[in-house]
Image 1 (tube, chains in turn orange, red):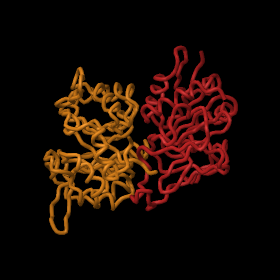
Image 2 (cartoon, rainbow over the protein chains, first blue to last red):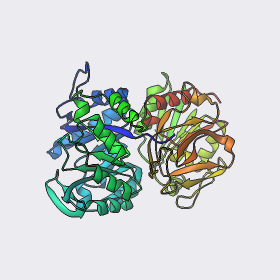
Image 3 (cartoon, rainbow over the protein chains, first blue to last red):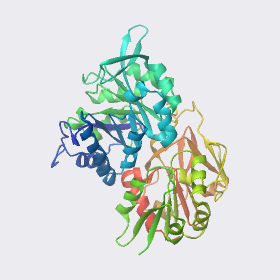
Image 4 (tube, one colour):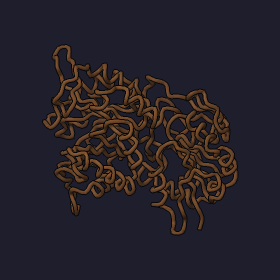
Length: 255
Length: 212
């Protein structure tokens, strides 16, 4: 009897459409976020994340409408991230129906934005996304990078995680920029170091290529939730297969 | 056919709550998100949601003149409290040392940092995710919902009623806590039915047809 570890499919959204699409059997429109969200709910996903990768500010407004349409029809938690600059952006997404908003670059630029947002809407709605790269090997040390992993901030990842949790983040989304897109597995040392350093839940992200990677995120990384994109979107594995694999490792999941 | 008032006192976005109710109500029933005392008093059923801090919730209720209407309708018609809408039904919350509505005797405490879960993991605060709800009593709102079904939670404080028989659901996060309360025409859940997929929609449908 314990809270289940969550599996969170993440969809990249550009101008209101899912980038690269999501492959389900008999799905009519692989790029439609509403249809994909409904399918993921039916398949047993515990939560959904939309990451806005839209470059232009005009088209960013379309994400608000995507969130409204999904939240009107799919009744599981929804997190929205990407391009959140200030408290107004947070409120706009929550009013559209998001349950949580993830803040990344804006928090590094102005750490106080996290405290202000949490004060306005409550910690339960504020996720801080931590993009980290390993900069020293022994003992390992990680630093925060922004702008999609291109720009170093000089901030130590563990200290930053503690600071963000204290400021009011209700959850931390930890992405290894070394592993993101490699399909070689999470950086479980990074996830474990942050999970042990804070009280708030940790979502592991970046690098999933197999179901064993998802399991390791929990058993080795100490993550409370695991986030993945491509292994689910392209039909390699179903959510049910992922949960079976985790349950077989003794991980508590919602079946 | 009747009206369900979803009380909007400025604590969190109610769009999902309203949409989930609209998803399950029979034709002719209106779901009305409202901050008006007159609407609350005129409604046939009351949904009382809430997010954020206990003190802010109580202040907002008073600022909008909703405390007395709420106390009245909580006596005489089907009433569903959700999340913070459960916690403020009790006498007192440790969150900001806040006196609450006192509709159910008991207090609200914070989870303790560092407690261990049944699987040996460290319990995180907030308690976030899908956890089992064990039905402490048979109740029309549990109709068709298997005992031990997982619902979606996100909270750092939990209710402890003085009278254990008020508990309708029990959940464990480091310790066992009361995840649902029931008394006469009141039902309240700490979890979010509007975010708990099919099981949550079933609970809302049960509320809509409940005749206490």
